[in-house]
Image (cartoon, rainbow over the protein chains, first blue to last red):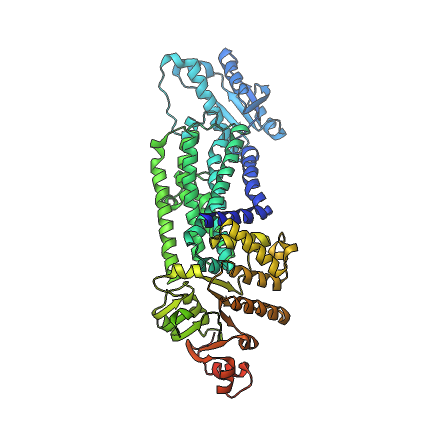
Length: 368
Length: 248
């Protein structure tokens, strides 16, 4: 116990005195949340919209008001001639024109189907697609409110993001992603480098010759990073609930519980890396290239796994961050409980045991 | 000689890595309070031998006891009774002098009062009163090494293993360092030291010279010089080491 306290004290000194690293560790998630939330969001806000209403009756006006009322669009002008569109796009007055055809109201009333035309500047196809999705969502809402009592056949939308994110807020998807990424950096990178540093400086020999058990060396390295990780998760959650207004729908204790398990998984991964090498540079390289990059690629928060080739989809299963991301998404965004995340938790525990087993094996080989 | 007066006893101690025999059946005794020098070229097997004696690595065969404990069965007890310092080890640079002392005192299980007393005594002996709050990285190398040695014996071990402790230190500091070693030996601590410097070999009570995993010569420096018909330990070492077949 006394040894453990002496060790933890020492680790806290190491972390606290390395001001620059500490600043990066705490500053990075803050910057990332701000960046993803405000700048890099694939959400499009306040798009300038030019409306060509050829229908001009009560219903079309209501529809246009609906569009105007959403935070995504600002109607900047009205016209009647579709021929104006080219001029408007080129002039830069608006990037998108919405054409409501003359038959809009009557089609909707009589055949329960109406067409709208969106003419967008597709230089950025992502923006065009996003705008398309917004208008589709608004028009579906509109149809439901206008014709709701008629029990019309309903087109089922399979996009889950729409289900859990009715306002199409882009912030949702990346908050769990940023958490996973930061934990990877702190727990895997920092832990492995910190252990390898002891080896590189020759201090590990000294510690192994002392009556301290290697377990204490490892645990005392893990505890400060564990606490630091929880602190940073709290900062991220606080920022995302206040500034980005992303709600935490599920149980906060479950959220912290699952995060703690992922932290432990990452810590053991860091430990495993530290047994593979004696050089800080190599430990850093393995952590960054071997762990962080796949986490970003296969974690599910940057690129949807579902749209990857089959081989990569199978590969993504060995990335712990993927399971963490699923679990956190379920808890935070969908508000689901333990019963829907226990599978992910079990998988993470499996990874932890695997990493720990290999590390112990490696350690024994080293000793004999 | 009574067994209780021996700090280290080895008999045919051997370490093999596959077909390579790093340490080949070495046998020697080290008496209590003795300064025992362990000499050899790089790759001669000194480090491997030392690792076996400190419990870092398990012998392939042979017997050894350190501080009365068996290296196979009682490695944990050995660890409690030995100190260790290597050239590579020079404390934690980003910790203050006092914090380094507290850390190593802590891992050797010194209680608060005992630690305080040992720490004060150590700082006083080294004359570091003005430097307790200095980061170790800001101390001159010689001081670091003296501090590292003092810390390695803070828990009053019965044996201290020094692995090339004076590497890269100027002659004056080396002399001061050896004075500290003598003081420690006077207090009854057995010193087991590996070195490259042959002038340091002269300071030892007895030396063992390893060549290709075997002990080729063992005795007091004066004895060895007579036996090899030369005036310097340097020459003794050279005569033995040039027979070596193993390189680095």
